[in-house]
Image 1 (cartoon, protein in one colour):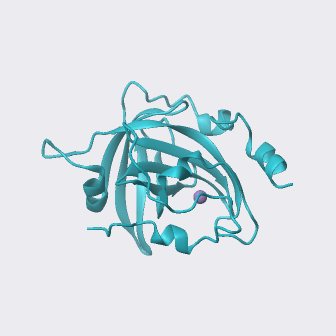
Image 2 (cartoon, protein in one colour):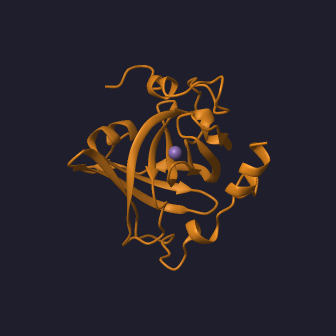
Length: 198
Ligand code: MN
């Protein structure tokens, strides 16, 4: 079991006097759980995939972003839990800070947990502990079933994010390539950097 506060790691990595990111305060659930995908131009560009569970955002860095093709397996590297308020964060993390670079809210919405084991519903936190969850996400760019599965690597653990083969699967569509703008502000990474660095 995890402790009552899983945001210690998030707080320890950041100096809130320097970064515009939200402080690590636990949030209250508001109806359906939320998901967010943030495009993050850090040392290397990646997409942070986050799912609300237990009052925080469980998080993975997905270098290539989500695919709509069920045949594509996308590497998802687990990162520290983030506060719920992070789902609204868009801006520039200053040079010298943890995760320095520009962040854009690439997609967001609600999700439903579909995880089962032997015909029984399994909670998201329990599923994550066991290394497998299945969710239905309802974003503006990306929708439908996705599966996250943990696997062991030489260096520890990593996960794969794979689109389920359902009515929302569409191998011919690649919003990571064709829809780069924020769903919140309509801006590109370059526009956010130009407006908020000055
Ligand atoms: Mn990131």
